[in-house]
Amino acid sequence: MGHRIPEETIEAIRRGVDIVDVIGEYVQLKRQGRNYFGLCPFHGEKTPSFSVSPEKQIFHCFGCGAGGNAFTFLMDIEGITFVEAAKRLAAKAGVDLSVYELDVRGRDDGQTDEAKAMTEAHALLKRFYHHLLVHTKEGQAALDYLQARGWTKETIDRFEIGYAPDAPDAAAKLLESHSFSLPVMEKAGLLTKKEDGRYVDRFRNRIMFPIHDHRGETVGFSGRLLGEGHPKYVNSPETPVFRKGAILYHFHAARVPIRKRQEALLVEGFADVISAAQAGIDYAIATMGTSLTEEQARILRRHADTITICYDGDSAGIEAAWRAAEQLSALGCRVKVASLPNGLDPDEYIRVYGGERFAGEVAAARPLVAFKMAYLRRGKNLQHEGERLRYIDEALREIGKLSSPVEQDYYLRQLAEEFSLSLSALHEQLSRSQRERTKPREAPDGETARPMLAKKLLPAFQNAERLLLAHMMRSRDVALVVQERIGGRFNIEEHRALAAYIYAFYEEGHEADPGALISRIPGELQPLASELSLLLIADDVSEQELEDYIRHVLNRPKWLMLKVKEQEKTEAERRKDFLTAARIAKEMIEMKKMLSSS
Image 1 (spheres, rainbow, N blue to C red):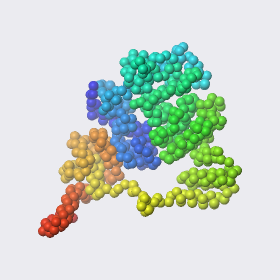
Image 2: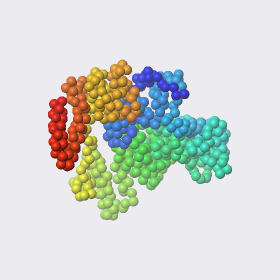
Image 3: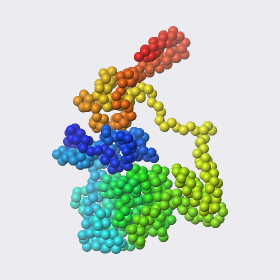
Image 4: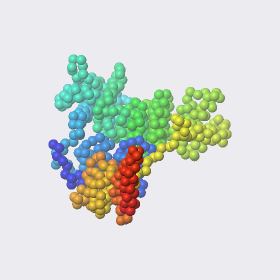
C-alpha cells in the first residue's frame, strides 16, 4: 500500500483535464478576458474575486488568498487527500490508475477509516432498505402508501426510497455480518446501544429517505413512521460524515440543472423535492425542515444567480421564507418567493392541483420586495391611520434597499397610488431615510470613524520580490539571472522558499509552465504561487526594470542596517558619548552614499 503515482502520470492527469470544467462543477464561472471569474467557494463574498486561468490551469482568490491547481481545488473543496483527488481527476482525464496500489487514507488514518466505514455502511443499508421496499412482501404496505400519495415506481427508484423493517436488529445483524464495528455504527447514528449492551436499530417500521452529501455519498437517513405513532420522523444525528447545516437535500443531483438554469427552487422538506422532481422541476433542493443556514446560503449563491423560495404557505412557512430571503439577498442573490394558497406545502399543492399548475406558481413567483410588502401588511389594519403610516415607513425601508432606481420608482408609484400620496413626498421621505442610514458612524471618542483601507500598500522591496518571482515563473531566462544575482537572498521567507522551487524546476530541464510548477510545490506555497502567476505583468521585462527589482531586494538588508545604526547613534547621544555618536553618524553618511549610488 501507499505506492506513489509517478510524476509523469500526475502530469498526464493534469494535462488531461480542464481546470475550468473541474471548478465549474462547484462554482458559477463567467469569462472575463483571458480568465474566468466567480464567487470564491472558500470564503463569503458578494463580488467575484475568484479567478481561474485556463491558460495556466490554476486558480487564485484575490480575497482570501486560496490558490493552486485542479488537484489542490478538489482537496480543499471536498476535504480529500491528494490520492483521492488524483483518482477523481484521472477518471475525467481517461488515465488508468488501476495498475497502482494506492493508499487513499488521509493524515488522520483512524478518523478517515472510520468516516469511510460510516459512508459504506450507509450505502449498504440504503440498498437493503430499498430492496425491502420494492421487492418484498414486508415492504408492500410502505410501497402502497407511497404510490397512493402519487409517487411512481420510477420516482421511488430515482430517490432510492426504502423501508426499514419492524424488527429490533435487522440492520445491526446485516452490518455485523459485513464486519462493520457496531460501536462505530452507533457513532454513525445507525444503531443505538441498550443498557444490557445489545445494539439495536435506530430506524424501525419506517419509510427511509437517504440523505446524500454534495458528492453523492449517502451520509444519513430520515425515517417516516409507517402508520400512527410518535415521533413521526426520526432523523440521523450529527455525525463525522453528516452535518445537517452543511447539506442541502438532493443538491448532489440538482447541481447541474441549477447551474444550467442559474436558478434553484428552495423548499422545506424531502416530500416537496420529490414531488417537484416528479413534476419535472429538477432544480429543487431542500433544507430538510430546518432554517436555512449561512453555509447552505453560500452554497446556493455560488451556483445560481436566482433563488426561488417556495416554503409552506402557513404562517411558520412565511416567516421562514422571510428569514431565508434576507440571508440570500444579503449574499447578492436575486430572490423570488412563490406563495401557495390555503397554507399548503409544495407536496400537498402538487397532489391537489397537479404538477403543471405548481410549475405555474413557481414561474409566477413574486420579486422579493413585492413579497416583503405583502408580508409587512400581515396583521395590520390599514384603515387605521397609525398602522397605515407604520406600514408605509416599513415599506419605504425595504424599497430603499433596492440598488435599481427604476425598481425603487416602480414600488414608490404603487404606494403613492394605493394610499393617494404624493410621489415627490415619498421620494423625499425615502431620500431622508437613506441619508439617516448612511450618516458617518461616530467613533467612541467622538471623532468620525474613518473607513478602513481595503489593502495596505506593500513596501518597495516586497513588491519587487513579488514581481521578480512572477517573471521567474514565466521565464527561464529571468530565473537564471535572478539565481545568479540574488540566489537565496530574498528577504521574505515565503519568497525564498518559492524561489528555491523555481530554481529546482528549471534545473530539472522544464520549460516555463506555471501550472506544472505549482503542481510540484508544497500546498502551503501554492496560494502565493497561484496569485503571483496571475499578476498582470508584461510578457517581457526590460533589463533596466529587472535591475531595479534586484537592487530593491539586495538593498533591503542595508536599509535595515542603517536603521540599526540610527538607534545606536541615538543611544550614544543619550549616554553623552558624543565621540561614538559622531563615528556612527559618519558611517551612516557613507552607507547612504552607497545606497543612493547603487
